[in-house]
Length: 342
Image (tube, rainbow, N blue to C red):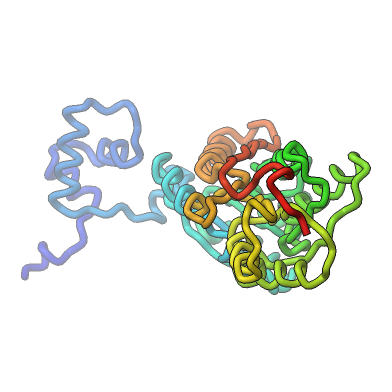
């Protein structure tokens, strides 16, 4: 193999093969609009023929952009929106790089990661934190001007953020049970350090209090199937009466269904169950699960689009974009008249 075959192609090689200036090649690579279609096609053919790969560092220096977005996550278990984020980033011309910082990490480690953002040649950051680790002020200081959007933030935070209205979702689920005549509603919460889990629990408690109803028995889970199973068993063993069960996510609802079936209890004839999230398998539970749907594709799209808009226009207004869940009624809930209660 000759030196010319093994040597990495340069911008000038592409220009020579296409019969254009190297400035024209640069415009094509950077998607500049002022290039004739015929010329652009010649350059693209030359790029493919030579297997040219732009030098990223040079591209950043030339354009001020790397077209790389960083996604910082704090718990791999909550990765459901990430495939959609990868899709929307690519659709908008960006590469999405994913990094995880453990929930057990010290604040110094988190600070160190954010303070080094500028050296990673990223254009912007999506922070997906289900835990209240960082305030908006801390994010501003640590990112040193790198645009960011928070996902899963506290409601009302004065920061670029995209969230689901957890209170609205919980209200839909609990109102559904109340409309069916249920007044004794037990609960399996998520980990209450988790923002969404805490908001769902607080909303359930507030609705029952507003109706003059006592809170039902409540057990804290960890959002995983085994904890839903164990929590449901504890609720049954407690002897406290309930005719309906609000479960903070569908995974735990699956575990709860298993525990109830083991005890010979029928859903929904004996106990109605509502989950949260509408995971893909929820429609195939036995019985199919009534749940609250959160549109993860919309969350991903809004997060990426908002971040890109800030990158392109730093004067983009700071706002919290709110997405509203919807109730999906299936066969795991029924009127109290059909329920024998406990």
